[in-house]
Image (cartoon, rainbow, N blue to C red; front, side):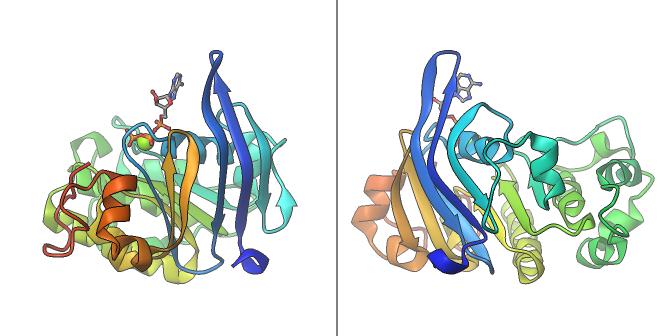
Length: 248
Ligand SMILES: Nc1ncnc2c1ncn2[C@@H]1O[C@H](COP(=O)(O)OP(=O)(O)OP(=O)(O)O)[C@@H](O)[C@H]1O
Ligand SMILES: [Mg+2]
């Protein structure tokens, strides 16, 4: 995958408040489809994506389509075509759905692709005038993902988009990510192994701020012992019940 990786992170280190959070993370995001970023709670997944975006002080190398971005400020990384749906969704509760989307429009990035967003999320069109704070968790996630699809991004990073959602909504969000990934490669932080199994070809597992595994997702999920050791899944990969939250 190396030659064609859209994002190549090498030896990413993050130091916050005198504490080393990442000790040298390496990962690659394929130029197509979904790459999953996995690991137990506190392993450093969110810090890794925040490091890629320049939201925390970092060192190492972050190549975006071959260009070194590790010294760039966040707005410059974003302008190069990185869309981010953060762990807390980053929704403005007091604004409407339409206003939340409008705020995400990036100047100089061409016409915002509302047709795509409305095709993938017809509900957002129907609820355009609804205050985002009154949406369900799943609908808020749709706004968060929709915002990343508005601009002509080269990479979408979604941090645990299915977390805390009801199983039916997990399925909906997973379907949307699957479709989004047909257009734009996705780095997906995810704890639900059924979602990973369905969407991701490649995966990276972090443990204690380091990369502990990188390789084909089906290889990891097919190896109950490795999944248990790396992900803390007590009973092997969650194969039986698609889109039911895996233990985390
Ligand atoms: N701003 C910060 N200041 C101090 N410590 C932090 C900060 N951000 C993260 N940490 C610590 O760094 C470690 C990694 O956190 P991070 O949020 O990256 O993990 P994660 O893999 O995303 O976990 P989760 O599955 O719970 O979302 C944790 O021990 C966390 O407490
Ligand atoms: Mg996290």
